[in-house]
Image 1 (tube, rainbow, N blue to C red):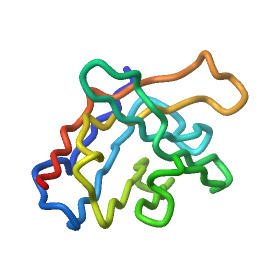
Image 2: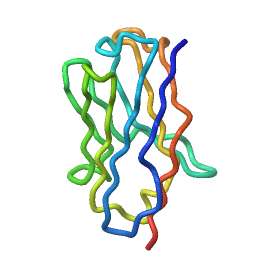
Image 3: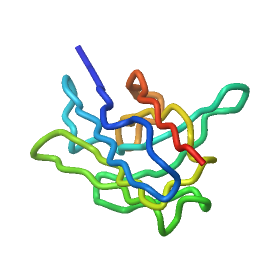
Image 4: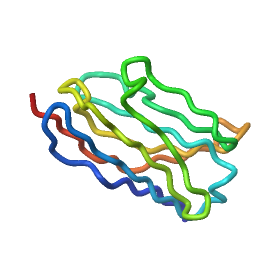
Length: 118
């Protein structure tokens, strides 16, 4: 059974930091691209950061220079370090695992709430 479990969300003041973690089980983690997405009510879920199996990263323009995605294949975990948080970063953050080269083979976590107070 595949499981992705996010943790690390919470309430933080503007300018603060949080580190999200995504623990994966039931998959061969090193074969999966890992992404962090976020969603607010009434809006489409958007890709925040992506890290490929080889470590290549991509970021949403609005988080470049503030957020950093990483992965630890030995621990089957992906992380999102979020610094200089802004009110507009408030959202539910989701972890997604996508099998490299097979975009239809993907799994989602249940999400973790991040709330940034202004």
